[in-house]
Length: 197
Ligand code: 5GP
Ligand code: MG
Ligand code: MG
Image 1 (cartoon, rainbow, N blue to C red):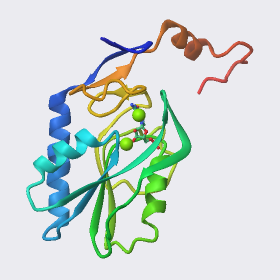
Image 2 (image 1 turned 180 degrees about the vertical axis):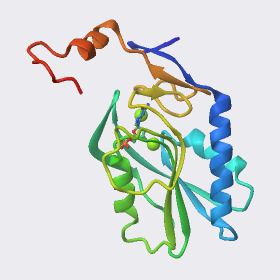
Image 3 (image 1 turned 90 degrees about the vertical axis):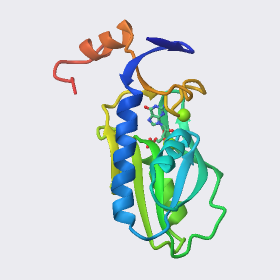
């Protein structure tokens, strides 16, 4: 178990599992892309490790660039996405593949689609290492998914909790405190019967 700031995290996904998922994504994407030279676009900050490891496994010539968006505050996603660094090159006619660390609510992905709406790319596909299906509330297709995970906050392999944890080579899941467990089991004060989700 590890402690970052005020919260505890337990081991969840090993470096080996991540490596296998990344190798599978690279194979699948290389198969689909064929002879095109794709542009891989990572969404900073979270995706820096995903991109670095992914492109080392990608067997063919490719371009790599980044855009920088921010949505998360602490352990919660917000709808207010900030564009900190946008696109800096012309992508007309290009095969573009977004590389994400994790897709949660999909708010960040919605912003990615807004950014690409007026770019005349040949194709835009989305690849993500982690995906939380229970949290996802958009309709955008996710073309390549590494590992589906439950709707709990994780850190490591690029993902942070208020700046910490990004350097961990494996992934940790937040540990519920006794207090939080009680809330889930018994509901908030005043909640009636049958309110459990
Ligand atoms: P979304 O906009 O889909 O809700 O969230 C996307 C971004 O929020 C991710 O790229 C990531 O930076 C951050 N995020 C989502 N879920 C988690 C999580 O469980 N842990 C951490 N550390 N960041 C997350
Ligand atoms: Mg991200
Ligand atoms: Mg973050």
